[in-house]
Image (cartoon, rainbow, N blue to C red; front, side):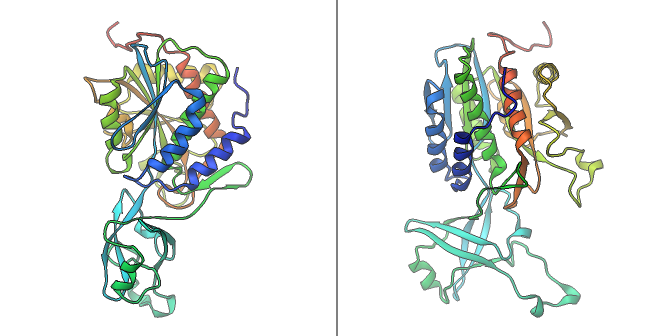
Length: 362
């Protein structure tokens, strides 16, 4: 029986250090090292691949393989062009939001270390109020305090340097976790906590469990595409974030209704295997774990799609963590939802039988 409150002091310390570490798409390895170090006591071995996906394995010799998965990368920017007067134009690395960039501080990652900068923006006094421009990719620039291109380059900044936001973790009103990169560093954290609970409760699974922290989700599910070919799983339970749709300017008729604090979100989508999903819903009901439902048109936009359509078809399901303000520096989730996602994945694993096919034709 799981305790009502799952997260201990060690868990939260790891979460804070894991979130505060920058791990942009294509540069995830330092975060992966933190994650693997935390996970080490709870798994039998690790698998890593060329691009940085990390997998902790329990029962590596078992022929039947179950994946629980999150993704490790966060959105960021690339240096794209340096003007003669020392300003930096950017392009996206993942779905970075131009609307929030103006006046944000940034870290530019160079071989010489971090170079600080700011996304500048014209003062309200100087803007044409009758025809105001909004921030867009073409007009946002980073200022690193230089007046020439040569000065910028002397700092070690060049085209291709990756840029992240320095915003760090804090807790709002006792139970709301706030940070950049909760999408989807929370997924990696939650699957690691599942592994911890399995170990602490001395659970012996009848199958191999592959706790998978994939890279490069933000630019097209690429890490999951690679690692599923390596693992060749029979079942995959993916966790990612999804939108809280109760904040202003979101149309519930279009986006559906999901809310932080109301529980994990279980998705209905073509990539979601129906019998696996229903097993997860039955588990939530049996264990009194609150949950919400979401319908997803066509692709889920998560690593679920990469696993589902690999290797001739893998029974896959998506359990999402509701989140406010996605792809901003103040992403927000509810601690209770985090704990309930962990519980739901944990309890669902205990229901999966060795050799289960989830076939519609049995």
